[in-house]
Every structure is written in structure tokens, then in C-alpha cells.
Image (cartoon, rainbow, N blue to C red; front, top):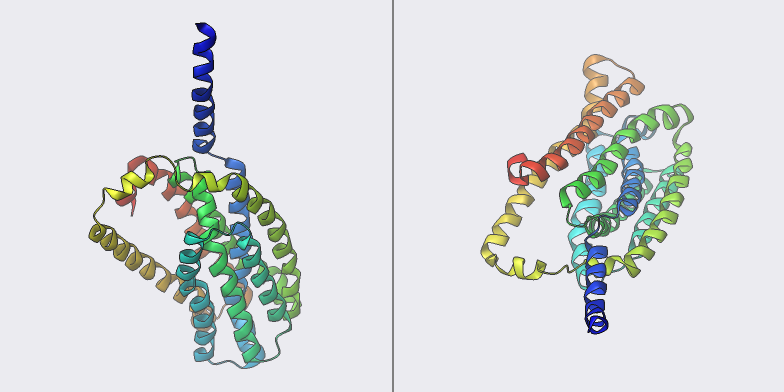
Length: 300
């Protein structure tokens, strides 16, 4: 009788083990994807940090600086929903490597660009890399969260915010003294990111896909009326738009304001930009755990 009970309980133990595996927070994957987010956003932050140097080198107007920002933000932001919708239907574990590859090409072109038209193309490639990277990398962070979504997303986001903060600092220390061709050195970061993302893609393929539809998630989502879901998405889109509207404005023109109004050097202006973006990173670190504890709506 005891043998029969043991045999009957074996499938139950296997199911519980599988469920525990799916629900466990995989900090190694979260750390890796957060570090890749750091590398990605670091490389993206180089472009606006270089604006004062590019303005002087190519005699650009502020309208042309704005067009550079528009090209980068258009490809980096507006393409993301298309990429996300496609990968919702057809998950692509190795698309992260492709996204970092676009960024690599953009950096190499930015280092060698000889005209404003080539700068625009470089900006579009870097932005396209971002649009491919962010939807799938955010999905990976959620897969690995084990239900601790606030913690996982805050760790993921802080990687990006740290990268955005470090970018202007490295531009001041490396690109400004050595000139535009030195941007090519940052392709090493892109290659490192591609190697890490290939390993993350392997985990995604073999383990992450099982976490896409955890038990009960579909039933919980079905309880919400469609109109309420749409209204919530509209509110979130408005909040995200307002946030990135002023962030893009400040990162694009803050250095020019400091140089013109306070007569600071380009190097010091970039250091001030580093302080601003570093403060954004600190807010992200604090916000995730607080959201888990007090509720995300209250923290927003």
C-alpha cells in the first residue's frame, strides 16, 4: 500500500518541482539582462552627450540637433510596440542579439560619419537597436522574476538608468579628449553585450518560454473588462509620454543651456548631465521595492 502511495505521489512531486522551478526568481538572469541594459543605454547615451562636440564639428543648428534627437527617439520608441506585438505572437529568444547588433553598426557609423546625413543614419541604427532590445529584455526580466515583478523590473530599469548616467561621463572622459573616432571603442561593449545576450537567449529558449503563461495568469486577466484594460493602458502611455518628453528635452539641450548661460566648459556640462541621469537611476532603485511594498499605483 505504501508503494502505491509513493507511486501516486511521484507525479505530484514532479509537478510541484516544475512549478517551483517556474516560480523561483532567477537572479543570475536578472543580473545579466540588467547589465546588458546598462551597456545598451550607455551606448545610446553617447549620442546626446556628443551634441556639443558634433554641433561645433559640423556647424549644426539647434533644429538639426532636434532632428537628430527626433530620428533617434522615433526609431527607439515608436518601433517598440511593433516589435513587442510581433514577439508576443512569435517569441524570438535571439532577437536580443540582433538588437545589440544594430547598436554596434550605429556606433561604428557614428565614429566614421562625415556628414549630417550619416549622423542621422547612425542615430536611426542606434535607435533601432534600442527598439528591438527593450521589449524582449523586459520580457526576460519578467520571466526570471518568479512573481517579484517590482523587484525584477526595478533591477532591470536601474541597469538602463546607470548606463544612461555613465554614458555622458564616459563621453567627457574618452570621446571629448580623443574625438569622434574614439566612439568606435565602445563597440567592445556591444560585442560583450551580444555574447551575454546569446547566453540569455539560450536560457529564454529552454526555460523562459515555460514562464510566459504561469498558472492562473490568464484567468486573472480575463476577469478585467476590456474597456478598463484599455483605459489603464492609455493612462500609462500618457505617464510614459510625459516622462520621456521632458527627459529627452533635458538630455538634448541641458548641456547647451549650461554652456551658454553659465559659461561652463563642455566637459563640465557633460558632468552635470551625468548627475542628472544618475539621479534618475537612484529614483528607479528606490521605486521598485517601494512599489512592491506599498503598491505601484501609490508610488506612481
